Image (cartoon, rainbow, N blue to C red; front, side, top):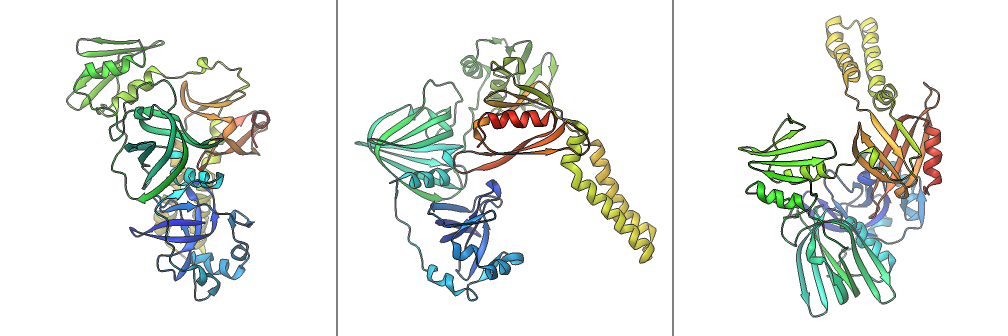
Length: 459
């Protein structure tokens, strides 16, 4: 496995000896820039600093790490890195033969499924990417992507057999590469409409962009994105009206007001010196929308989804248990405040610490934590489970939708406080090996929901 690593603004290439996949907390074991130390390096800290360009294969797995057996089984090495997260290569000469400079090819070529996965990983399936440049030469198409995640990727599709709707892409939400009998195909399965090098329009487009070709090559360049997907900047309400009319027929332009209807709700948009002022059901909303955000807000209003819009059979409908939600999310803060106060009392009686110092250093801090715990605003979340999806609603408004087929791991923790209540911790793996956690926090009938989810596609 080989990676481009960014250190203090400069990039270098290093072998990767092991990897610990934990989504945004993924780590790799690799050389530092001078190749004098082996280090544990965070892939995202706070921005992306590790770009794996050759996936490779490992022969050993130990705990959460995957890597070479001679690395993972070296207890002396891991002991040396326990506190400093690095080890001197002088103490581990077995790494020196790997310290030679690595010269990357000008173009990486896709030859098999491993190569497809490498490109998918480094581009994160081009999620949130925008097209900077599209060039066509005879039967070849070359596209430069601003991944908006610390690098540019140029993909060369050679021997293009067929393609469609590429000029309609503003921002990519998800895409995939597939090996076919006659070559390869790249499909954009979810995207916002627009045009290469120009802002996204977020207008409906029928169909999925794709390129079918004989072969694929790609190269990566580290650098901050020069392009961001932005909505249009409107000169007046009429242009906004034209775009929203493509989303819904329930849009009316009346004088200096844009009136939107959705179910029983009415949203009125007016221009103001600071941007756009909005009124929801006759009540002025706080703040004013800037020109680049008003389309997203209005589009969300016109397409809002409520529980009654679910067409599948509802298998479970539960809400979070507020007191236990607080306990599950704040138990460590509560434990800290208790132990911190107890330590202060010990110092008062045994070390004769002054009561004023105790009040300032120990009691005040603990009281702050407890008050925050007591008055923290916990929104009640409603979870609706069908055979294929889990819907997260804040009151009656859809917050997110989780496809059950994406779930790769689920664990049930029964509450010791209240019978029948439990916490479901869920891990989801998306394309590009991105893993993140989400959960159903402290819900009734947790065992029932756990069984339903496992019956409907969890690996």
